[in-house]
Image 1 (cartoon, helix red, strand yellow):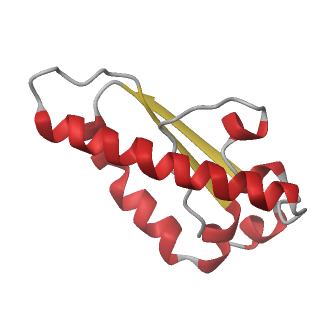
Image 2 (cartoon, rainbow, N blue to C red):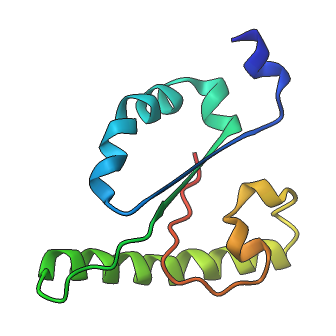
Length: 110
């Protein structure tokens, strides 16, 4: 744990086709979130590449909810950035920091 205090930040990037695969990391995600030092230093970048089947209404509703929340979060990011409240690029989704208008990002502050 002493090493974790010496490091400024960690980025964990995981790309998968199926959201079910994120369940394999659930234990690690829980350990990160329950540790106050790690929670402030670890950024989880979880990317899902599979498209939802047209016939799966639950998947469609989930994606739409993510898109709507993403619009709200991106607007909050832009306002915070313009006000000078965001000082480190690691505090926000990298796609937004580089100017992309990605609409399926959830920004979770820990």
